[in-house]
Every structure is written in structure tokens, then in C-alpha cells.
Amino acid sequence: MTYRRRVQVTGGGTFLVTLPKEWADQVGVSQGSTMVLIPNDSGAMLLVPEGMRAGNRCTLAMTGREPVHLQRDIIARYIAGYDVIEVVGDRIRPEGRRVVREIAQSLVGVEVLGETLSSVVLHCVASTRDFPAPLTIRRIFEITAAMWDDAVAAFLARDEELARDVVERDGDVDRLVLLVSRQFGLLLRDLIVEEEVGMSRFQFLHYRTVADQLERVADHAVKVSRAARALVQGLPSRSAGRVREGSSVSRHILQQAIQAFEERDVALANHVLEEKEAKASLSEWMQEAIRAQPQNALPLTLLEDSLLRCREHGFNIAEVALDAAAGVLPPEGGPAS
Image (cartoon, rainbow, N blue to C red; front, side, top):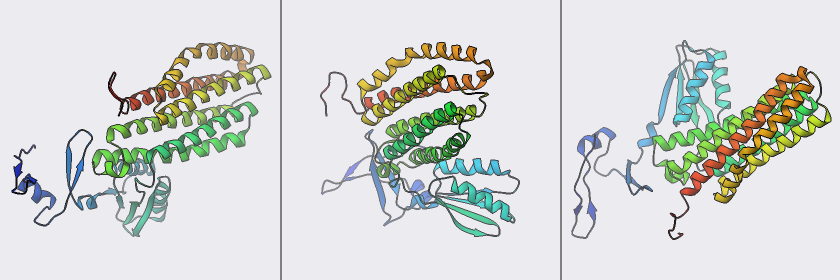
């Protein structure tokens, strides 16, 4: 429903707009209530009754849910921006409580606020101010880049211990990516969060997209680590050298793409995108390596796919960098601010 009101002017020159009574009654606004006014980049003004966010909670029934389904449902509510998630049941057994606690531990800032025989209450205490998106993206990249380097090292050395360590670190990336998703969900649900985050929903969308791309690179690091355990024998020095070279190129593309995004560097983003044509040479020598060691065909094929995908995600981030820069650069031919 859309309401229209005419602006009135008091004797002192103050502008007044009346509130629809139906809406005011619905949200609990009455005489003396405090309203929060938030200007938006588009020129619009958001009107929020103070204390309206206190009811940001939801309830999930545990009865009849498999642990994996409960995990998905809790994560979905976490991303949607709920501050309090109450899991209820006729009687929650110890193993059920343990499952809920483990799910909470997999999410940044989620704590068990209270427990009874029939409920477990989760509370998200992470403030958007505590985890600024630029720093979170930087941390995701650092973890992902280290995972990628170690995954390739594990592949070349057939180091199962290092490969397992890479797989375990994937959880750290997932937790931070879910945190970014939650912050974006909060922005979509509640525009007042824009003031806390320090950027608009449109601006934050770029960070959300970059976090997704980095998560996929981390997934490919896991894929390479698992492929390392499938190697029948070590690679000859020539093939190993080519793998190191290909991995270095992919990582460099990713690093430059992140730098272009962080600095809103259009020239660097375009430079990264110019590297797209180089993927053909990778396929040529990789096919040669597979012909030389057909027993390693599967792990080598998986490695080739991940090398190419890592580059593609870097290119995607470079394109996001161009989109993000368009929001801060002056129009073509216009003056810089």
C-alpha cells in the first residue's frame, strides 16, 4: 500500500508530514514515540520507529528434522538477518542440543543464549561494525590464497597431511562468507543497517559477489587437495614445473583482481581481463602431461579444471571491480568530485 501526504509548513518554517494512522497503530507509534530518519543515496528518506528491530527473532521446530535440514534452516535464518533463532521441540535430547551447538559454532558471532528441556535459543551477537566488509574480504582472500598455494604444494609433493589441512581450512572461509551474506541480508531487510555498515545495499552487493567468487576458489583448493590423494605416482620435473607456473599465473590473476577491487582501479581490472586469452596454452601442456602419465589422468584433469576455474573467478572479480569503480568515478566527461 502506498500513502501520499502533502508537506505542510509551520510558522517557524519547519516542514511537517503526517503519518497514516493505520500504519502507526500497526507498528506501535503513538504520541511521544521517537522516529529515526535515514537519508538514502537515491535521495529517499527512510522512516523507522525506534525499537522496531527488537522483534527480529524467529522459531524453528526441531521435531522431525534431520540434522542437515536443521543446519540449512538455521543458516538460512542467519543469512536472512535474524538476531534470535529459537529451536523448539517437545523434548530436545542431548544429541540434539549437541547438533545445535555445533551449528552455532560454524557461524560467526552466534552464541547459545539459553537452554531448556524444550528449546535452545541462539543469539547472533556479531555487530556489522565489528566486521567491516572490506576487512572481511581481505581476510577471506588471505585464507583462500594460502589454501590455494598449499593445495598445489600438496599435489606436487603428494602430501596427504597438508592436503587434509587445506580441506579443514575451507570451513574458515565458509564462516566468513556466510557472515558477509548475513550482513547483506540485514541490509535487504532493514535499511537502517546502511548507517552501521557505512555503505548502501548496491555498494555492498559488490562485496557479496566477491566473497562468493573467493569461496569458489577455496572450493577448488579443496578439490586440488583431494586430487593429490588420487595421484598414482609423482609428476616428472617438467610437468611439475608447468604446474607451478600455471598455479602462479592463476594466483597472480586472482591477487591483481582483488587489488583492483579494493582500490577501484579500472586500469588494473582491465589489465587482468586481458589475460583471458592465455588459457589455451595451459590446456596444451596439461594434455601432454596426461598422455605421458595416463595413470594420473583423473587427478591431472581435476587440477587443470581448477587452474582454469581459479582464473575465471579472478576475471569475474575484475569485472566486479569495474562495476564497483563505476559507482565512485565521475561520469564520462564530467568533473571529478
